Length: 139
Figure 1 (spheres, rainbow, N blue to C red):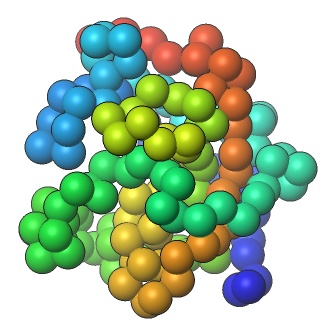
Figure 2 (tube, one colour):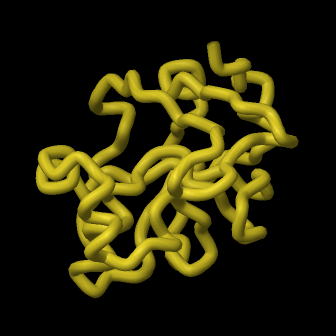
């Protein structure tokens, strides 16, 4: 397993969008929502890091061919993404593939890892019930 860096070493300020898009229906109970990653930063502890097989995680773009996925993502973000940082996933969160985990942060990382032939990696695993209260209606 590769060496990893913790997300607590860097500030996070992204947003997880729960919406209907080219990637599918990622809404929560039919509602378009957003999750500010800074709101869940305090939940990212070393105790939450686990090795998870990528085939158990629903992530935006998993339904696309590699070529189409690469056309839909920001190329700089993809090439610059730091694969040593664990992604963030929610256990038992609604997702269009009915998989055990939903990717909250890290679609560029998981795509890059998979391109490298790596199909299991480290993730912060958060219970959906613990982050659900941080979801807000999208303005």
